[in-house]
Image (cartoon, rainbow, N blue to C red; front, side, top):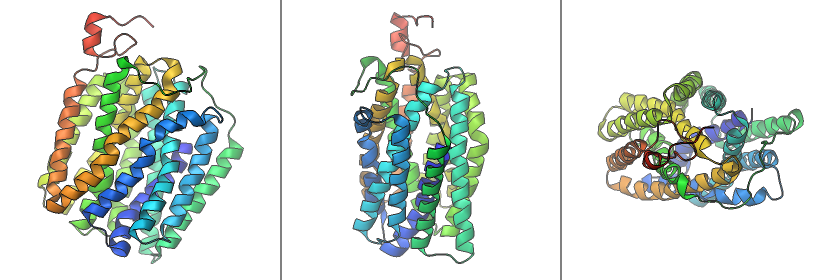
Length: 383
């Protein structure tokens, strides 16, 4: 339920963003990249979430985060300028990223290892359903002539606020069974998870920052076009996410991460070379669906990690993920001014590096068997 609320606000904000910034503010590739870099700064600072846990429970922080996200969404339409977009984006992003940090932490603590991939797939499907609702609602609103960005963003914010308040009064108290370490933690044996997370941050930004922007800027997709495209992507993700979660449980994290990066490599090369809007749209849908496979990184860590490290590592991992996320959009956006295809060729390079790293993931991850290199010297202990 909480994943649904969070993605309802974020997806609605994102669905309108490219058209809002192109039509009302006159954004080009550089401004689009800068906006996405600013959006990722709160993610880069996600490690600070561990210190809030000294005073508040994860569930409380999650609720507060969604109210902050709603505030940022509500303000967006009122400030059609570069500075206004950057400030409102930052506010929205603080809420989104703090919630996602708490969400990941609680998933790792509460879900049983054997069933975690399937249940994480269901949670992902709930978020995809929220995207479906947001994109479908926006498409209908635009088709009916309701094209005031202030009104559209405001409606999304009100819905998120109401659903959050309902959740606060409806749900009880949820906490993990193992007390969490409330300090900054970096462990040498988690190094492969950290690197995979770093590479994932760069990959994700290419989809969020430039996949949709390419469709609007190069192929002239309207708000209706983008909403319908995102509607198809989210509906298919809602259908396939639980199945992809089950796939992770069936074939393991190593093969799943390999499959994800092979698909990404094909998608980024396609983005770089295509001159067809229909092909680019198809690649966008494929990219969105297979993004679910990134769950394999979470379940990989759940299997190798100390149960008391889940909250701290979730915070640190978000920061590591967003080191690339802060740098990639503004740097790649500048390169896009030269030739947008450069962005996606570099994305293919990122996918190639991630694919190479996936060969280091053991077939049976566990404490003492974190990588194939370590596993060769130290067999995984029985659990």
